[in-house]
Length: 313
Image (cartoon, rainbow, N blue to C red):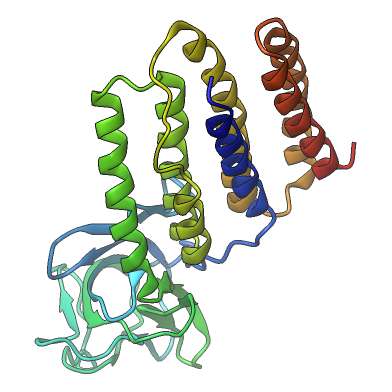
């Protein structure tokens, strides 16, 4: 077995672990007023983000929102009680080619304050539910920033709910190009019969890089993709197919920890319990590996020690 490949696998694992403690930033409405929404690229029709707060407390991110992107935001507002004065909808996006707003519901009267070509509109504070579409172009940003593509305010100006996706810089384009190259390389490795354990680890790294980009960590995602070796991949011999899944298991575990920690910031105690369980699993893998290859056993033992230090064991 090529020890360079083993070393590369461990480097990739450590690269994943290095981003585990970074905080996540993705602000959205709580779903009390804006009960669901879909964000699309208005030029390509690609769905970027979907949320239905009756089904899930968190939105589903399919692709990042990029600076300068043309968006179509379809959302449903539940005005669950009547009130005095008017409600207001505003957007921080710049003017689209057509109107900003399009009312998709026919059974809700917005009143005379509904001016579709304005970035800010008022409407009657009357109980009911309606679906609206907002069009616009996302402003340029110098760093990942939450932009209010739709904001619902009360009569006194207080914000009742908002749709605020994380907008990424143009660096996300560089990530996508690199990702496409790595994805094509993975398919060629699979077609040429590279060891299944290695290709599984490769796929896991691709998935983890997408998760990082969705959270705004574009540079870290690019670094993670660049850590994948460009040559020397192991062919699927019997010995390699035994050893590489061991590395893959450790890599998958670390990637899952990273995603879980990013998505559930603050749940450190739960995170620690899961890591401790994985350490126990690694101890068993280390014992099995020692009967096949002492170098592999030593490497897995090193990974286990790093995980222990991570949780203070």
